[in-house]
Picture (cartoon, rainbow, N blue to C red):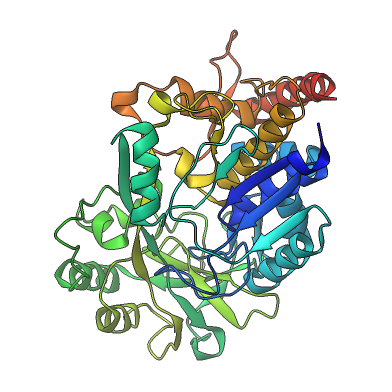
Length: 440
């Protein structure tokens, strides 16, 4: 095929779009990457860089015996640009992979802009077009514009869903009261990478009472809240019962206070936002409280009485398709194979999962354009488990999901719980070796 015709169009310069563009370009295709920033910003974005992280700076567990850690292992095997840069810009976060978000985005932007086969075009795209010679990867993310969503619906029908994702606040470290707050990672001896704000029972009950009575940002008339269970606003969790938060983001187990020698009744954890440790985010504290209420109620947290907020929490729309009805295992639309969906729009949840779908979309679009067979990843891998979730789940029960071992094939023989992570790792390694040989 003529080099000029080996072109792929990628719409969206987020995590999935950047990874898709990189993978396709590395395979020898020319890529036109469309990103509307800085001409236009979504309600949740503010940086002019590509690959801007909004909700958190954490890419979750790095342990290869966890599902998301195993997904990172597989992506490293496939030379993922974004996971490589995440490793290079990591900040201390226990067993998690957390990054300096500004440095991360800046490096991704630099690498994408410098690639000789990638042209970055700063222009909003509001409609999809089917083109057999120039396939399109749509990776506009959870804040896909109404115009683009309408255009996508023209290809898919109105079978798309929407839910709302909440953002946790970021605070200044120097404004914390370290006479109350202490360092410790859950279950680990000695100081850890997390700061912990300990509650006694009286403080906890007063806190959740205030949460229950707080003002929240109202949804617009046309909006219907369909929250992702793994990222619920804290006030929604609080409404489910007095102890819900104590079994969720405020779980005190394994966080023994060195000053008292006992576990607190409840605890709020703070995680570093940058290597310097000057900024921290409230772990699991996504919220749709109004700004004044956030300041009032979060200053009830022990050690945060005079805290300075560098960013307050907010809520934003997340749009995704009903993947089992609409997508092939290749991430191509069943109704139009020249269009690929990537990132959260495809029906996954989480930074790493979104990037992984970008990786696969980029590889698959390039292979198709170069006349090669598209080969889906095996279901015993994290990549394959996500594809299986997107394409084989009952459409009536479908909702976005993080990668987890529940998405993997059932065990043929019973495996002790403590050995399951390592066994999944072994099966993935074997399957990835065989699959990568087929792709070669």
